Length: 117
Picture 1 (cartoon, rainbow, N blue to C red):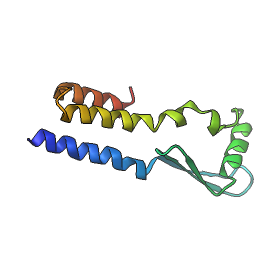
Picture 2 (spheres, one colour):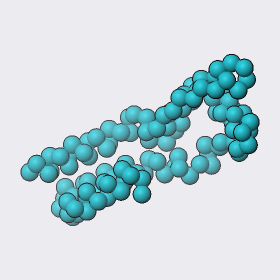
Picture 3 (cartoon, helix red, strand yellow):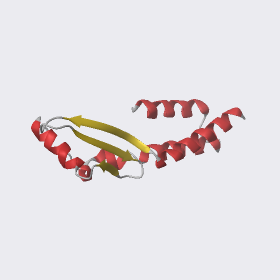
């Protein structure tokens, strides 16, 4: 019974993760003689939020400065796959609650998802 309750709590937390940023970063760089602050948040719903609005352009200028190619979020496969991870994990939790997957497989799949394997 405790395992089912914990599984249900885990499922609710996984589904709640769609409402919060999956990844965020704060960048500060004095490349142009002043400090430029950039906030980037990646949401599980599949969009990227940049603050200020020209943050991607500024980040691409910094990339060019150090010899990296520009970032193009439309072409980044990672941003398309990010929403699938919690959805797949939620499906595994539901299958466990229905008795289709044993606890050890649930633990292994959860562990692999958490370490990013």
